[in-house]
Image (tube, rainbow, N blue to C red):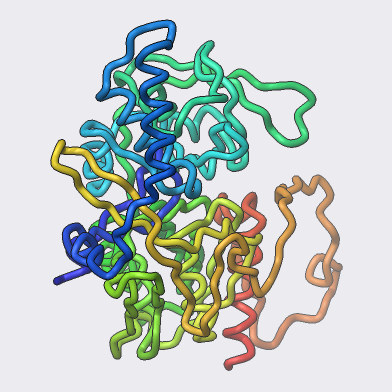
Length: 429
């Protein structure tokens, strides 16, 4: 089976973060190895409760609804990432693979019965409205989130593009809940963006890991090289901040672009086909030029695979804040009604054998969450060249224009990453 071609993405506006392995019938074939005896006493208790609800609940409930709710309960009781996908939710999941879907533009999970924002996605309605990683959503319009399943909350948030939804959120440091109105839209995620920070120093931002992210990354680096002297880069900042993850094969492709050999990631689980490993090919697109990878608390899943692989191989300096800590693997299993279940089937490990589940990637250089502000200097200091009858430099006096990139001057982690790349190149010379 070609695993990479069957991998599915995270559900951008709905499901919790995950790297999903679409193994389908292969997993079902493993059931013969599992003890198939059924717990009769527990099934008897289930049957009794089923009958009591049918007979005594205040309103009539169909057998279909009761059984579907039972399936949802089985999955949500396992972990935050296992869930039931009805036909529409499964369709939305597949649409997310192409980087275009409807909704708010946030990656969410569940915590203590509330919807927790893992991260807002770049340039989406939620991002522009000021939603932040770590926000807890307690109401959707006037509906309390407590008691909803994640799928139920997602259905409410998706809705028709152009319509509004009011999110009531709890944010750390705020004395009372915040109410934020967001207008739904068709979300088009641009996976890879790039630009030169300064001559020879490139910047690549990966917002999510989609089907073509590896290919787009190579195109971006080729563009940066063409804009650089000698068609080579002196260094690269790879920005994975607030990247919720996505396709496993995309994470492998991105890691492989910067490595020339060795293990990238491996997975382990109970079933045979959940045990996989991925290795790098021989070509490093930067030919050893230094890399700084930026991460934060919203960097999860596939982002952590890339950061962990480059860190273990000492190919990049990881800078920023502790990542999210999503180290489990979900498998999508279709059912005969057009829906599916998303089931946690394995854990993934970095090349050195680290599990980052509930731990995350620890940066090599930790940065505080501060803002960088460029101050206006009203006072111009007098220098030697301003003094009357100063000695002339024998090599001539050259006026140098200082070029400041706007985002670097306000983005503290990016500013520090660029300085580090420059320092590495100074020492190399």
